[in-house]
Length: 123
Image (cartoon, rainbow, N blue to C red):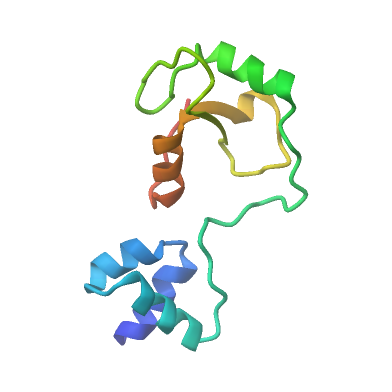
């Protein structure tokens, strides 16, 4: 398989430009050019399963923060208030705002999580 075909294959599998770039020693911009040349739309994030995004109600957000004791699920850093904390949908379905689908993450871990390629086992 040629390099460009491999890049497109990895892109279709959901890998980020950054991770593909590391594999081939190319910049994110170059990966984008190759993907664009082959007619694929640019994607910054993993696909959202439900495009009917439902905002998380304030009371539900508070319940999730309190359940998780204002602690990041991944790095276990505790926060005195909600500043710096975010809610993450475990199954990436933004329409499913059930308590079992929501966890508390700090901003840093939330950004890293959406850039990851491997799955995290939550429970």
